Amino acid sequence: MTGENLNVFESAQAQVKMAVDKLGLNLTVYDFLKDPMREMTVSVPLKMDDGSTRVFRGYRVQHNDAVGPAKGGIRFHHDVSLDEVRALAMWMTFKCAVVGIPYGGAKGGVICNPEDLSHTELERLSRAYIQAISPIIGPEKDIPAPDVNTNAQIMSWMMDEFSHIKQYNAFGVITGKPLIIGGSLGRTEATARGCVFVIEEIAKKRNINLEGAKVVVQGFGNVGSFLAKILYDKKATIIGISDVKGGIFNPKGLNPYKVSEHLAATGSVINYSGAKAVTNQEILELPCDFLVPAALENQITAEIANKVKAKIIVEAANGPTTAEADKILEKRNILVVPDILANAGGVTVSYFEWVQNNMGFYWSENEVNSRLGQQMVQAFQRVYDLFQARKDVSMRVTAYMLAVDRVAEAMKVRGWIGSKVEKDQAYTYKLA
Image (cartoon, rainbow, N blue to C red; front, side, top):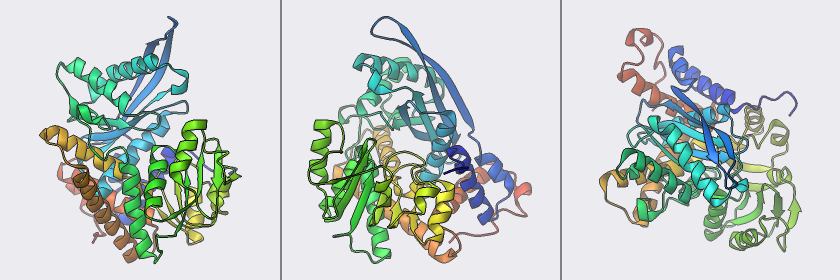
Protein backbone atom coordinates (compact mmCIF):
# COMPACT_ATOMS: atom_id res chain seq x y z
CA MET A 1 0.00 0.00 0.00
CA THR A 2 3.04 2.28 0.14
CA GLY A 3 2.42 5.46 -1.79
CA GLU A 4 -1.16 4.52 -2.72
CA ASN A 5 -3.61 7.42 -2.55
CA LEU A 6 -6.44 6.40 -0.23
CA ASN A 7 -8.25 9.76 -0.24
CA VAL A 8 -11.76 8.68 -1.21
CA PHE A 9 -12.80 12.13 -2.43
CA GLU A 10 -9.88 12.35 -4.85
CA SER A 11 -10.69 8.82 -6.03
CA ALA A 12 -14.31 9.81 -6.63
CA GLN A 13 -13.19 12.87 -8.59
CA ALA A 14 -10.93 10.70 -10.74
CA GLN A 15 -13.83 8.36 -11.51
CA VAL A 16 -15.95 11.29 -12.67
CA LYS A 17 -13.10 12.72 -14.78
CA MET A 18 -12.65 9.38 -16.53
CA ALA A 19 -16.37 9.20 -17.38
CA VAL A 20 -16.40 12.80 -18.64
CA ASP A 21 -13.41 12.06 -20.88
CA LYS A 22 -14.88 8.82 -22.22
CA LEU A 23 -18.14 10.59 -23.05
CA GLY A 24 -16.32 13.40 -24.83
CA LEU A 25 -18.01 16.01 -22.63
CA ASN A 26 -16.70 19.53 -22.22
CA LEU A 27 -14.59 20.07 -19.09
CA THR A 28 -17.26 22.48 -17.84
CA VAL A 29 -19.25 19.36 -16.92
CA TYR A 30 -16.36 18.10 -14.84
CA ASP A 31 -15.95 21.51 -13.18
CA PHE A 32 -19.59 21.29 -12.09
CA LEU A 33 -19.34 17.71 -10.84
CA LYS A 34 -15.90 17.53 -9.23
CA ASP A 35 -16.97 19.49 -6.13
CA PRO A 36 -20.17 19.61 -4.07
CA MET A 37 -22.58 22.47 -4.71
CA ARG A 38 -23.06 23.04 -0.96
CA GLU A 39 -21.29 22.04 2.26
CA MET A 40 -22.21 22.69 5.87
CA THR A 41 -19.88 22.11 8.80
CA VAL A 42 -21.53 22.36 12.22
CA SER A 43 -20.43 22.31 15.84
CA VAL A 44 -22.95 20.33 17.86
CA PRO A 45 -22.89 20.97 21.63
CA LEU A 46 -24.15 18.03 23.67
CA LYS A 47 -24.97 18.01 27.37
CA MET A 48 -23.74 14.70 28.71
CA ASP A 49 -25.49 12.65 31.38
CA ASP A 50 -22.91 13.74 33.98
CA GLY A 51 -23.73 17.40 33.40
CA SER A 52 -20.65 18.22 31.33
CA THR A 53 -20.82 19.52 27.75
CA ARG A 54 -18.99 18.11 24.75
CA VAL A 55 -18.88 19.61 21.28
CA PHE A 56 -19.11 17.26 18.29
CA ARG A 57 -18.20 18.14 14.70
CA GLY A 58 -20.78 17.31 12.03
CA TYR A 59 -21.17 17.71 8.28
CA ARG A 60 -23.86 17.78 5.61
CA VAL A 61 -22.74 17.86 1.99
CA GLN A 62 -25.03 18.27 -1.03
CA HIS A 63 -23.23 17.31 -4.21
CA ASN A 64 -25.68 18.04 -7.03
CA ASP A 65 -29.45 18.51 -7.32
CA ALA A 66 -29.89 18.94 -11.08
CA VAL A 67 -32.09 15.83 -11.31
CA GLY A 68 -33.98 16.26 -8.03
CA PRO A 69 -33.70 16.84 -4.27
CA ALA A 70 -30.48 15.76 -2.58
CA LYS A 71 -30.55 12.33 -0.92
CA GLY A 72 -28.11 10.50 1.32
CA GLY A 73 -27.45 8.91 4.66
CA ILE A 74 -26.08 10.15 7.96
CA ARG A 75 -23.31 8.20 9.63
CA PHE A 76 -22.07 8.38 13.21
CA HIS A 77 -18.46 7.21 13.25
CA HIS A 78 -15.19 8.23 14.86
CA ASP A 79 -13.40 8.31 11.49
CA VAL A 80 -15.87 10.60 9.69
CA SER A 81 -14.09 13.32 7.72
CA LEU A 82 -15.23 16.07 5.37
CA ASP A 83 -13.50 14.43 2.39
CA GLU A 84 -15.22 11.12 3.15
CA VAL A 85 -18.62 12.82 3.30
CA ARG A 86 -17.87 14.69 0.06
CA ALA A 87 -17.03 11.42 -1.70
CA LEU A 88 -20.11 9.67 -0.37
CA ALA A 89 -22.33 12.56 -1.49
CA MET A 90 -20.78 12.42 -4.97
CA TRP A 91 -21.28 8.66 -5.17
CA MET A 92 -24.92 9.16 -4.17
CA THR A 93 -25.48 11.53 -7.10
CA PHE A 94 -24.33 8.89 -9.55
CA LYS A 95 -25.94 6.01 -7.70
CA CYS A 96 -29.32 7.71 -8.04
CA ALA A 97 -28.59 8.53 -11.68
CA VAL A 98 -27.54 5.02 -12.64
CA VAL A 99 -30.79 3.51 -11.33
CA GLY A 100 -32.86 6.36 -12.75
CA ILE A 101 -34.48 7.86 -9.65
CA PRO A 102 -35.09 11.63 -9.42
CA TYR A 103 -32.57 12.52 -6.72
CA GLY A 104 -29.19 14.13 -6.47
CA GLY A 105 -26.57 13.10 -3.95
CA ALA A 106 -25.96 14.18 -0.36
CA LYS A 107 -24.34 12.74 2.74
CA GLY A 108 -23.94 13.62 6.39
CA GLY A 109 -21.87 12.55 9.32
CA VAL A 110 -20.94 13.26 12.92
CA ILE A 111 -17.53 12.47 14.36
CA CYS A 112 -18.39 10.31 17.36
CA ASN A 113 -18.35 6.78 18.69
CA PRO A 114 -21.98 5.85 19.43
CA GLU A 115 -20.81 3.06 21.73
CA ASP A 116 -19.45 5.72 24.09
CA LEU A 117 -22.85 7.43 24.33
CA SER A 118 -25.82 6.47 26.47
CA HIS A 119 -29.26 6.08 24.92
CA THR A 120 -30.30 9.55 26.07
CA GLU A 121 -27.03 11.13 24.91
CA LEU A 122 -27.47 9.52 21.50
CA GLU A 123 -30.98 10.95 21.25
CA ARG A 124 -29.83 14.44 22.23
CA LEU A 125 -26.97 14.27 19.71
CA SER A 126 -29.33 13.16 16.93
CA ARG A 127 -31.74 15.99 17.66
CA ALA A 128 -28.99 18.60 18.02
CA TYR A 129 -27.42 17.60 14.70
CA ILE A 130 -30.75 17.96 12.89
CA GLN A 131 -31.30 21.35 14.51
CA ALA A 132 -27.91 22.43 13.18
CA ILE A 133 -28.49 21.30 9.57
CA SER A 134 -32.24 22.04 9.43
CA PRO A 135 -31.86 25.16 7.22
CA ILE A 136 -30.65 23.06 4.28
CA ILE A 137 -32.78 19.90 4.55
CA GLY A 138 -36.46 19.19 3.91
CA PRO A 139 -38.77 16.88 1.93
CA GLU A 140 -38.21 18.94 -1.23
CA LYS A 141 -34.58 19.92 -0.54
CA ASP A 142 -32.54 17.13 1.00
CA ILE A 143 -33.81 13.88 2.50
CA PRO A 144 -31.42 12.10 4.91
CA ALA A 145 -31.47 8.38 5.74
CA PRO A 146 -29.63 5.85 7.94
CA ASP A 147 -26.02 4.90 7.30
CA VAL A 148 -23.15 3.48 9.36
CA ASN A 149 -24.10 3.36 13.07
CA THR A 150 -27.49 5.02 12.56
CA ASN A 151 -30.82 3.21 12.45
CA ALA A 152 -34.59 3.59 12.37
CA GLN A 153 -34.73 4.85 15.96
CA ILE A 154 -32.22 7.59 15.26
CA MET A 155 -34.17 8.52 12.12
CA SER A 156 -37.31 8.77 14.28
CA TRP A 157 -35.67 11.28 16.61
CA MET A 158 -34.35 13.28 13.67
CA MET A 159 -37.72 13.35 11.88
CA ASP A 160 -39.45 14.34 15.12
CA GLU A 161 -36.98 17.16 15.77
CA PHE A 162 -37.41 18.55 12.26
CA SER A 163 -41.20 18.30 12.68
CA HIS A 164 -40.96 20.32 15.92
CA ILE A 165 -38.97 23.00 14.09
CA LYS A 166 -41.52 23.17 11.24
CA GLN A 167 -44.56 22.71 13.52
CA TYR A 168 -46.07 19.94 11.41
CA ASN A 169 -45.43 16.24 10.82
CA ALA A 170 -42.72 16.22 8.16
CA PHE A 171 -42.58 12.45 7.62
CA GLY A 172 -41.02 12.91 4.17
CA VAL A 173 -37.87 14.66 5.47
CA ILE A 174 -36.26 11.35 6.51
CA THR A 175 -36.35 7.83 5.12
CA GLY A 176 -35.49 4.60 6.88
CA LYS A 177 -38.08 5.32 9.58
CA PRO A 178 -40.14 2.79 11.55
CA LEU A 179 -43.37 1.71 9.83
CA ILE A 180 -45.60 3.41 12.41
CA ILE A 181 -44.36 6.87 11.36
CA GLY A 182 -44.22 6.47 7.60
CA GLY A 183 -41.50 3.92 7.02
CA SER A 184 -41.65 1.53 4.10
CA LEU A 185 -41.95 -2.22 4.18
CA GLY A 186 -38.81 -3.80 2.76
CA ARG A 187 -36.56 -0.83 3.58
CA THR A 188 -34.38 -2.53 6.23
CA GLU A 189 -33.04 -5.21 3.87
CA ALA A 190 -33.33 -3.13 0.67
CA THR A 191 -29.59 -2.56 0.07
CA ALA A 192 -28.88 -6.26 0.53
CA ARG A 193 -31.84 -7.36 -1.58
CA GLY A 194 -30.93 -4.96 -4.37
CA CYS A 195 -27.40 -6.33 -4.35
CA VAL A 196 -28.74 -9.88 -4.59
CA PHE A 197 -30.76 -8.93 -7.69
CA VAL A 198 -27.50 -7.72 -9.24
CA ILE A 199 -25.65 -10.90 -8.21
CA GLU A 200 -28.38 -13.01 -9.81
CA GLU A 201 -28.10 -11.05 -13.06
CA ILE A 202 -24.30 -11.17 -13.29
CA ALA A 203 -24.39 -14.89 -12.44
CA LYS A 204 -26.64 -15.44 -15.48
CA LYS A 205 -24.35 -13.39 -17.73
CA ARG A 206 -21.25 -15.29 -16.56
CA ASN A 207 -22.90 -18.75 -16.55
CA ILE A 208 -22.49 -19.24 -12.80
CA ASN A 209 -25.17 -21.33 -11.08
CA LEU A 210 -26.10 -19.34 -7.98
CA GLU A 211 -27.19 -22.54 -6.25
CA GLY A 212 -23.98 -23.82 -4.73
CA ALA A 213 -21.95 -20.74 -5.74
CA LYS A 214 -19.27 -19.92 -3.18
CA VAL A 215 -19.74 -16.49 -1.61
CA VAL A 216 -17.56 -14.49 0.81
CA VAL A 217 -19.19 -11.58 2.65
CA GLN A 218 -16.84 -9.03 4.20
CA GLY A 219 -18.77 -7.08 6.81
CA PHE A 220 -21.70 -8.49 8.76
CA GLY A 221 -23.72 -5.41 9.67
CA ASN A 222 -27.16 -4.63 8.30
CA VAL A 223 -26.22 -5.07 4.64
CA GLY A 224 -23.83 -8.00 4.96
CA SER A 225 -26.01 -10.04 7.30
CA PHE A 226 -29.19 -9.67 5.25
CA LEU A 227 -27.31 -10.32 2.02
CA ALA A 228 -25.76 -13.52 3.38
CA LYS A 229 -29.16 -14.74 4.59
CA ILE A 230 -30.94 -13.98 1.29
CA LEU A 231 -28.21 -15.74 -0.70
CA TYR A 232 -28.23 -18.68 1.75
CA ASP A 233 -31.99 -19.02 1.21
CA LYS A 234 -31.28 -19.15 -2.53
CA LYS A 235 -28.95 -22.12 -1.89
CA ALA A 236 -25.67 -20.25 -2.36
CA THR A 237 -22.80 -21.48 -0.17
CA ILE A 238 -21.59 -18.77 2.22
CA ILE A 239 -18.00 -19.87 2.88
CA GLY A 240 -16.65 -16.75 4.59
CA ILE A 241 -17.98 -13.98 6.84
CA SER A 242 -16.16 -11.24 8.72
CA ASP A 243 -16.71 -8.25 10.96
CA VAL A 244 -14.38 -5.60 12.35
CA LYS A 245 -12.81 -8.09 14.80
CA GLY A 246 -11.99 -10.84 12.31
CA GLY A 247 -13.41 -13.49 10.02
CA ILE A 248 -14.57 -17.10 9.86
CA PHE A 249 -14.22 -19.62 7.04
CA ASN A 250 -15.74 -22.98 6.23
CA PRO A 251 -15.37 -24.33 2.66
CA LYS A 252 -18.51 -26.46 3.18
CA GLY A 253 -20.57 -23.41 4.07
CA LEU A 254 -21.79 -21.34 7.01
CA ASN A 255 -25.35 -20.79 8.20
CA PRO A 256 -25.66 -16.97 8.44
CA TYR A 257 -28.75 -17.24 10.63
CA LYS A 258 -26.75 -19.14 13.24
CA VAL A 259 -23.78 -16.79 12.76
CA SER A 260 -26.15 -13.88 13.54
CA GLU A 261 -27.22 -15.62 16.75
CA HIS A 262 -23.56 -16.08 17.69
CA LEU A 263 -22.88 -12.42 16.91
CA ALA A 264 -25.80 -11.30 19.09
CA ALA A 265 -24.58 -13.46 21.96
CA THR A 266 -20.86 -12.64 21.79
CA GLY A 267 -20.54 -9.32 19.95
CA SER A 268 -18.58 -10.77 17.01
CA VAL A 269 -18.60 -13.51 14.39
CA ILE A 270 -15.18 -14.74 15.58
CA ASN A 271 -14.95 -17.98 17.58
CA TYR A 272 -17.99 -19.36 15.78
CA SER A 273 -18.14 -23.13 16.24
CA GLY A 274 -17.25 -25.20 13.19
CA ALA A 275 -15.34 -22.50 11.34
CA LYS A 276 -11.69 -21.63 10.90
CA ALA A 277 -10.52 -18.20 12.05
CA VAL A 278 -9.13 -15.91 9.33
CA THR A 279 -7.89 -12.34 9.42
CA ASN A 280 -9.69 -9.40 7.87
CA GLN A 281 -7.17 -9.46 5.03
CA GLU A 282 -7.39 -13.22 4.50
CA ILE A 283 -11.18 -13.04 4.15
CA LEU A 284 -10.69 -10.94 1.02
CA GLU A 285 -8.27 -13.44 -0.47
CA LEU A 286 -10.38 -16.61 -0.19
CA PRO A 287 -11.10 -18.51 -3.44
CA CYS A 288 -14.78 -17.96 -4.27
CA ASP A 289 -17.25 -17.16 -7.03
CA PHE A 290 -18.44 -13.92 -5.46
CA LEU A 291 -16.59 -11.65 -3.05
CA VAL A 292 -18.98 -9.10 -1.54
CA PRO A 293 -17.30 -6.27 0.41
CA ALA A 294 -20.07 -4.89 2.64
CA ALA A 295 -18.12 -2.77 5.14
CA LEU A 296 -16.32 0.57 4.66
CA GLU A 297 -14.19 2.33 2.04
CA ASN A 298 -10.69 1.36 0.89
CA GLN A 299 -10.85 -2.30 1.92
CA ILE A 300 -9.47 -3.82 -1.31
CA THR A 301 -6.12 -2.10 -1.78
CA ALA A 302 -3.46 -2.71 -4.43
CA GLU A 303 -1.69 -5.14 -2.12
CA ILE A 304 -4.84 -7.18 -1.60
CA ALA A 305 -5.95 -6.92 -5.25
CA ASN A 306 -2.91 -8.94 -6.29
CA LYS A 307 -4.05 -11.75 -3.98
CA VAL A 308 -7.80 -11.76 -4.64
CA LYS A 309 -9.01 -15.17 -5.86
CA ALA A 310 -12.68 -14.32 -6.44
CA LYS A 311 -14.17 -14.61 -9.91
CA ILE A 312 -16.40 -11.57 -9.40
CA ILE A 313 -16.44 -8.74 -6.85
CA VAL A 314 -19.82 -7.16 -6.11
CA GLU A 315 -19.50 -3.95 -4.10
CA ALA A 316 -22.22 -3.82 -1.44
CA ALA A 317 -20.23 -1.12 0.39
CA ASN A 318 -19.43 2.38 -0.83
CA GLY A 319 -15.94 2.76 -2.30
CA PRO A 320 -14.46 -0.52 -1.02
CA THR A 321 -11.93 -0.78 -3.88
CA THR A 322 -9.11 1.73 -4.30
CA ALA A 323 -8.21 3.18 -7.69
CA GLU A 324 -4.93 1.27 -7.85
CA ALA A 325 -6.68 -1.96 -6.88
CA ASP A 326 -9.22 -1.36 -9.65
CA LYS A 327 -6.46 -1.26 -12.26
CA ILE A 328 -4.91 -4.47 -10.94
CA LEU A 329 -8.23 -6.32 -10.85
CA GLU A 330 -9.01 -5.24 -14.41
CA LYS A 331 -5.63 -6.51 -15.62
CA ARG A 332 -6.28 -9.80 -13.84
CA ASN A 333 -9.72 -10.10 -15.54
CA ILE A 334 -11.56 -10.08 -12.22
CA LEU A 335 -14.90 -8.42 -12.88
CA VAL A 336 -15.98 -5.70 -10.42
CA VAL A 337 -19.67 -4.78 -10.26
CA PRO A 338 -19.41 -1.21 -8.94
CA ASP A 339 -20.95 0.21 -5.81
CA ILE A 340 -23.05 2.86 -7.55
CA LEU A 341 -24.97 0.02 -9.17
CA ALA A 342 -24.63 -2.90 -6.76
CA ASN A 343 -25.69 -1.15 -3.56
CA ALA A 344 -28.30 1.20 -5.00
CA GLY A 345 -31.18 -0.85 -3.56
CA GLY A 346 -31.18 1.15 -0.34
CA VAL A 347 -31.65 4.54 -1.95
CA THR A 348 -34.17 3.06 -4.39
CA VAL A 349 -36.45 1.91 -1.57
CA SER A 350 -35.77 5.17 0.26
CA TYR A 351 -37.19 6.84 -2.83
CA PHE A 352 -40.20 4.51 -2.63
CA GLU A 353 -40.65 5.50 1.04
CA TRP A 354 -40.53 9.20 0.16
CA VAL A 355 -43.08 8.67 -2.63
CA GLN A 356 -45.38 6.83 -0.20
CA ASN A 357 -45.00 9.64 2.36
CA ASN A 358 -45.89 12.24 -0.26
CA MET A 359 -48.93 10.25 -1.41
CA GLY A 360 -50.06 9.15 2.03
CA PHE A 361 -50.58 5.72 0.47
CA TYR A 362 -48.44 2.73 1.44
CA TRP A 363 -47.46 -0.35 -0.53
CA SER A 364 -47.25 -4.01 0.41
CA GLU A 365 -43.84 -5.59 0.91
CA ASN A 366 -44.33 -7.67 -2.24
CA GLU A 367 -44.98 -4.51 -4.25
CA VAL A 368 -41.88 -2.80 -2.80
CA ASN A 369 -39.66 -5.80 -3.55
CA SER A 370 -41.13 -6.24 -7.03
CA ARG A 371 -40.55 -2.59 -7.91
CA LEU A 372 -37.03 -2.81 -6.48
CA GLY A 373 -36.29 -5.86 -8.62
CA GLN A 374 -37.52 -4.12 -11.77
CA GLN A 375 -35.42 -1.03 -11.05
CA MET A 376 -32.24 -2.96 -10.24
CA VAL A 377 -32.49 -5.38 -13.18
CA GLN A 378 -33.14 -2.56 -15.65
CA ALA A 379 -30.20 -0.56 -14.29
CA PHE A 380 -27.93 -3.59 -14.40
CA GLN A 381 -28.92 -4.34 -17.98
CA ARG A 382 -28.17 -0.77 -19.09
CA VAL A 383 -24.73 -0.85 -17.49
CA TYR A 384 -23.88 -4.35 -18.70
CA ASP A 385 -25.04 -3.67 -22.26
CA LEU A 386 -22.79 -0.61 -22.49
CA PHE A 387 -19.95 -2.56 -20.88
CA GLN A 388 -20.30 -5.25 -23.55
CA ALA A 389 -20.64 -2.73 -26.35
CA ARG A 390 -17.60 -0.67 -25.38
CA LYS A 391 -15.20 -3.48 -24.42
CA ASP A 392 -12.50 -0.88 -23.66
CA VAL A 393 -13.67 0.17 -20.19
CA SER A 394 -14.64 -1.49 -16.92
CA MET A 395 -18.16 -1.88 -15.57
CA ARG A 396 -17.37 0.91 -13.12
CA VAL A 397 -16.55 3.31 -15.93
CA THR A 398 -19.63 2.34 -17.94
CA ALA A 399 -21.83 2.88 -14.87
CA TYR A 400 -20.28 6.31 -14.41
CA MET A 401 -20.70 7.11 -18.09
CA LEU A 402 -24.43 6.43 -17.89
CA ALA A 403 -24.79 8.33 -14.62
CA VAL A 404 -22.70 11.35 -15.62
CA ASP A 405 -24.51 11.56 -18.95
CA ARG A 406 -27.88 11.72 -17.18
CA VAL A 407 -26.79 14.43 -14.73
CA ALA A 408 -25.05 16.41 -17.49
CA GLU A 409 -28.19 16.31 -19.62
CA ALA A 410 -30.24 17.66 -16.70
CA MET A 411 -27.72 20.46 -16.12
CA LYS A 412 -27.75 21.29 -19.82
CA VAL A 413 -31.53 21.55 -20.21
CA ARG A 414 -31.75 23.61 -17.01
CA GLY A 415 -29.28 26.08 -18.48
CA TRP A 416 -26.50 25.46 -15.97
CA ILE A 417 -24.21 24.60 -18.85
CA GLY A 418 -24.42 27.07 -21.75
CA SER A 419 -25.16 25.55 -25.14
CA LYS A 420 -22.50 27.68 -26.85
CA VAL A 421 -19.85 26.34 -24.54
CA GLU A 422 -20.99 22.80 -25.07
CA LYS A 423 -21.91 22.56 -28.72
CA ASP A 424 -18.48 21.67 -30.13
CA GLN A 425 -17.45 18.95 -27.71
CA ALA A 426 -20.35 17.77 -25.58
CA TYR A 427 -22.21 14.57 -26.35
CA THR A 428 -19.86 13.50 -29.13
CA TYR A 429 -20.47 9.94 -27.95
CA LYS A 430 -24.14 9.00 -27.80
CA LEU A 431 -25.14 6.36 -25.33
CA ALA A 432 -27.35 3.55 -26.56
